[in-house]
Each structure stands twice: as structure tokens, then as C-alpha cells.
Image (cartoon, rainbow, N blue to C red):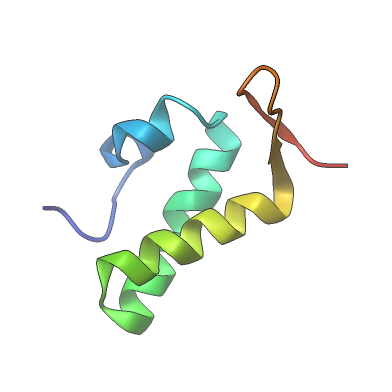
Length: 69
């Protein structure tokens, strides 16, 4: 599997199909940084989702992600 991700097109379907483009970019950058730092996929995905959640919130009613604040 290609690690780190070169483009957002390489992100997992669950990320690409649910997050807005900017959030996907945040995810990719955070994942790649965490991958370089820790070298473990599980940790890198956890860090990436955490980074997204700092800027975006999921609307529980619609299931869509929106910029926070």
C-alpha cells in the first residue's frame, strides 16, 4: 500500500467519500507527517482524523462534515 499519500486521490475511500476537499488535504498532510514520525499506519490514521476534527465537525443529523466555527 502506498505510504505516505502523494495526492488526496490516494486517500482511503472512507476519507474521500465523506470529507470536503480541504479536510482531505488536512488529513493527507497530517497522515504523512505522522507516518514519517511514527511509521505505523494505525497511529498515522488516528493523528490524521484528530487533525481534521480540529477544523471540521460532523453533522450527526446529515452525516456531512462542515468547517467548525
